[in-house]
Each structure stands twice: as C-alpha cells, then as structure tokens.
Image (cartoon, rainbow, N blue to C red; front, top):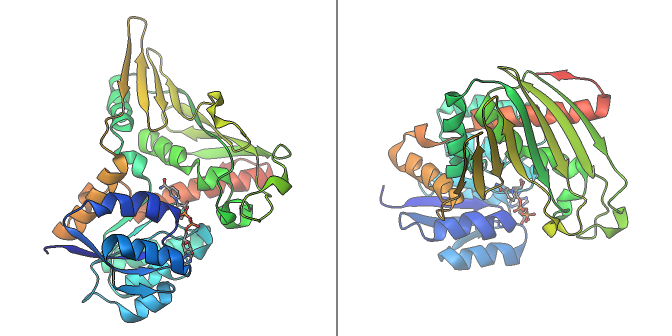
Length: 337
Ligand SMILES: NC(=O)c1ccc[n+]([C@@H]2O[C@H](COP(=O)([O-])OP(=O)(O)OC[C@H]3O[C@@H](n4cnc5c(N)ncnc54)[C@H](O)[C@@H]3O)[C@@H](O)[C@H]2O)c1
C-alpha cells in the first residue's frame, strides 16, 4: 500500500489541533473522506488535505465508503456520539482509531471489543501518553526497585470550553473524560486495579460561568483511592475549578518507592530522586502524539498491530476503572473490579 487512505469522523478540536496536524506531515497518508455536521469544520479539514468527499455525519460516510475506497477510520466525536460509529466500521471490516473516552456506555464498548475480535481488526485508542518517552522511563525504572508504595496521580486545571464537557451526562465527569489519561497511565505502570473508592465535591465553579452556553453541573474536584497489585495504592485527584491554571497546580504522577521517589510532570519531564542523587529528564521534542499516529498507520500498512500500545481491548479496561470510580462517587461504596 503506497498511501493509507483515511476517513475522519468528527472534525472538531482534537482533529484539527492534534491528529490532522500530526498526519499532515505523513507522506504515506491521504485523507479521502471527512464527516462532521458542522460545515465549517469539515471544510476546514478537507482544505488541509485536499479532500473531495465531504459528509454531514458518519452515517452518510459509511453509506458511501467501504474497503475499496478507505483503509482506516479516525473517530473523533464527543463521548455520547459513539452510536454506531465503531460498529459500522466493524461491519465494513475497517480498522479504526478512536479518541478516549470511547463511550459512556460500557455495554456498547463490550460489543465493540467482541466485533473487533471476530473480525481481527486493528484498533487504537487515544491514550497517546503511553508513547511518551518520559512515561516509558518510569515504566523501565520501576522493576529495578522493590515493588509497592504510595502513588499520587493528579490532573488539575480549569473547565474545558466544549459544550459537552459542562454536563456529567455528556462527558462522564472530569475523572472519566480528562484524568483518564493519568488513570490509564497508572494501569500502564502498575497493572489492573483491585478496587476503587471515590468521592466528589461541587460548589466552587459557578454554573452560570459555564462555557458554550450550557450550564455546568459536573464535579469541581474528586479523589479516588485505587488499590493495585503488589501493595501499590494510588490516590487519584481531579480538579477543574482553577481560574488561573498558571498557579503551579501539580498534574502528573508521583511514586514513592522504598529507595526512590519518581515524579512525572504531565507531558513535560520526570525526576528520579534517591538519597545520593536527583536525575531529571525532559520530554524529547518528538511529539508523542505523532508516535501514536505513526504506530497506527504502520500497523495498517503492515497488518501487524503489535506496535499499538492501546488497542480497544486494552482501552476498555480504563473505561471500566473510570466508571467504577464514578459508581463509587455515587454510592459511597468501594467498587471491586
Ligand atoms: N487524546 C487527547 O489528549 C484528547 C484531547 C482532547 C479531546 N479528546 C477527545 O476527543 C473527543 C472529541 O473531542 P473534541 O475536543 O474534538 O470535541 P469537539 O466537540 O471539538 O469535536 C467533536 C466533533 O465531532 C462532531 N460529530 C459529532 N457527531 C458526529 C457524527 N455522528 N458524525 C461526524 N461528526 C460528528 C461534532 O460536530 C464536533 O465537531 C472527545 O472524546 C475528547 O475526550 C482527546
């Protein structure tokens, strides 16, 4: 295959600012079809790639395209818009990359995993931090030490400006929509969680100051306590109440081992500290998002998906853990995984 022919479903923020920007420089990629109900968005992306086939939504696109015209699909819609966006790709035998969190409906996610396995399709989820060099340095360092200890994960900032983020019913809450990158990182580093207990608080963010004309009703901050194997206990905090995010709030992962502390600052750097020394490594300028998109495109070309660090069958485990934390916030009970 000379060039991988892609179709884009959803031409909003993550498409324009991330995947389209990354893929634009890939000489072995062409975007042959795009879909978005918002005309201006689909036209902007089509203009970037010289795309001629523009559709109003995923249904129109799947009605007119198939394996003879498209090699793979990028699905970049909001969390509640994953109706049959993946199931129709599966029916057509089309591999897909899908943005996190891939749905709020775990039953749908289970059907997708089953369909993908039956058709043996290559998939990738938008957990691109698994491709970060500094995240992988942490992963390499951990087995050199006695396992076990305290872990602190955090994602703290302001309220994102897209309409669907304002409501828990359309984004799933901050832990599920945003901090899920850290939660997925914890799974990547420490394995599968045993159980989770979580609480949430409201009252700091004023519903009337909401973005995009939709009033805000989700949690301002939450704390989840997650037990992992090997005596690892993580506290995972999420906060979206900051009005001035430059105040130095910590986002990232801190690991306290018996003989070393590791501090990974979100998408920036990692510091390894022992009694004798402190070693800091900054993230390389090579964009980890490009590495993630490259891994997917290479897999489509070769038919070998082993270079993909977050196939759907793995990504669904982060959804399950995030939903378990949400359940605990609602019931006040520990949820076993
Ligand atoms: N991996 C990351 O770091 C990262 C960062 C930001 C957003 N995201 C995720 O990407 C997804 C999209 O986020 P966004 O910020 O781009 O949102 P957005 O609202 O800017 O864009 C979503 C787009 O999908 C379109 N859409 C909705 N239904 C459609 C359909 N049936 N067919 C075609 N298009 C449709 C909408 O019109 C909109 O333009 C979310 O799940 C979000 O969590 C991931």
